[in-house]
Image 1: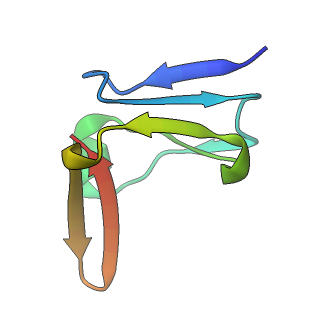
Image 2: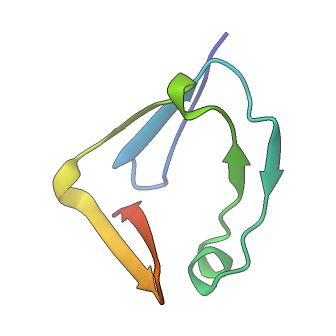
Length: 69
């Protein structure tokens, strides 16, 4: 059995063979506003599909996050 999901706008989709080992709630302003919950797992087992022209970079200090819009 595999697990599938997507963002609400369906621009990015993911598929994993099992649920992540643990979840966490990020407290940055972006995640607090969107209600995001993050899961941690082996990236080699995740299939992520998205359109490369829809990537948005969020830079805060020396850290960069990439989001699909």
